[in-house]
Length: 54
Image (cartoon, helix red, strand yellow):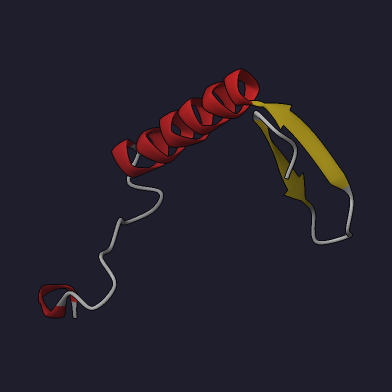
């Protein structure tokens, strides 16, 4: 892992290097997409091991 940044490795082995700021923006964007999918009821969030969801 580079100092002050992150490396994402794809399933094909390709490396994507991100600065800390880029990684922060990426995670915020990914979380916003997740929340939008939940809001649209296209996915249902679940908590692993939660017996109330069975």
